[in-house]
Length: 354
Ligand SMILES: [Cu+2]
Image 1 (tube, helix red, strand yellow):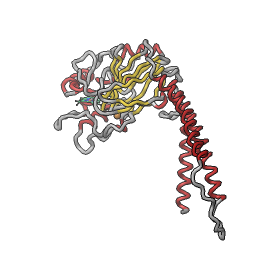
Image 2 (cartoon, rainbow, N blue to C red):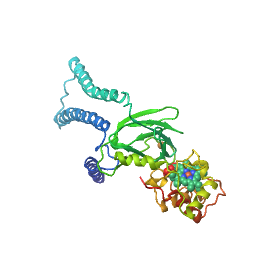
Image 3 (cartoon, helix red, strand yellow):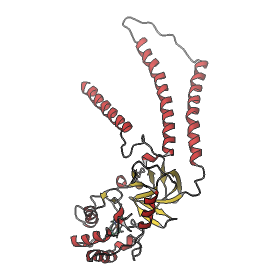
Image 4 (cartoon, rainbow, N blue to C red):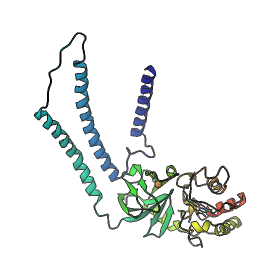
């Protein structure tokens, strides 16, 4: 009994600490510090619901506890309480009160649902988001850009996000932006936002995550929404599809390997013969912060680890991203020198220029 009480105390303290941290700290995936109009709308309904349910909780719990105490069994008291069966007035009352309370929750909810179904701004920037096991593809049909795992947007701009899936059901969620929607095969779901105003003058990063269990590496299916000042976004668009400029012999070797070692069958790189569609588009990979959907840093070491992990078919195969669909024939060989060359090619010197 004592240990149960102690356990409850620890749990209570922990949840209080977590709750307070979540309220006051700008955690990467907090839903308390939202930055879009939609996020604020949702939090308003959430607040109304919380206030109403808290009042209901106390209105029920306080008389209940009082009755438990007031009418408790006393030694020697053999009286039986007055037996009551049915009371129409009370029954009507406690049916009407919840109806009225639910109307107070329903009306602001309906208002937001209607607002979300309004036609998007005709000048909005369209972004097609395609969920894959286990990474995200971002296509900008009007700008001719295709990228992965990082959704670049200009600040304070209306955008239309069109959600599609290449395989199973995923879900799109950037907690600090509010709104969450399923990404379904065969259906296009649409989300509209006005992108946030910048907090940092250089740009802000918002964490996103797949929130529908979609297979073995679902937990490693992250992405980032990158909000940039308008001018910086324009220069990102200009560099995003730059074909690689080969500057060194190592980069040349890397390109030759890329075009001979089956990489090109799954990946595209603008301006080359690589036009594969299975994996992420690797054009200007150097300007991304992470690889494999937020699993590894986009550095020489990160890329090295990724390639080793995908190719070694011994015990340490796919420890970074179990089940990853980057697969090779069993006898496929890639030496450390090959990996160095491929890494140099993928992070070629023309990258990172936006
Ligand atoms: Cu998913």
